[in-house]
Image 1 (cartoon, one colour):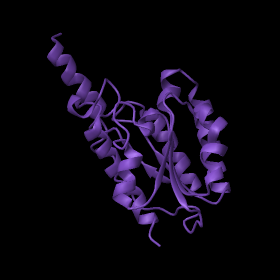
Image 2 (cartoon, helix red, strand yellow):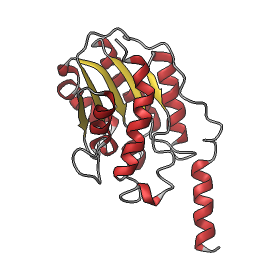
Image 3 (cartoon, rainbow, N blue to C red):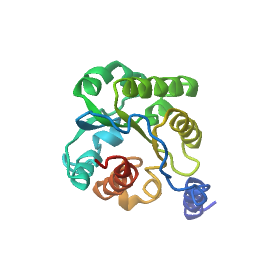
Length: 207
């Protein structure tokens, strides 16, 4: 099969199922009246901003869109297990109002059982909510890529009163002009992510 045909099939696979995916509808969110003071983006390389200069990462761009401080608590290579080891110092001690959680990709790459990933994500969300903050899950799936993670994270969000931001890499993974390497966004890609996150969380941040 020709290389061009293989690329077309790859694009179709990644985008399959996304057309019919519903938009992120507003739902009841736990701790919506949080008295916390800060927004924290807690994640892996996608949150950290791998592949771009400081200030071009999505948390920095989100801060500009919201007009308020946003802390970037992303660490390249982190799994959900790594997140649990640093959540106290990186997130909970900072009196968060909203924590945007973005993990799962490294769990997949390191072949960590999904049951463990889901369990860890539930623990992360519980710790955030028990501290009185709102939580949001930024899902890094795209089409059928990490589709099962999207389904599980959506269930957690629905059950726990969490803002769910589906498929933040949709439209980026299949577009080389939006990436700095095979996986990570470039500055234009991170702008797209920041916009998606902004539209999802803004309705819950009104005073």
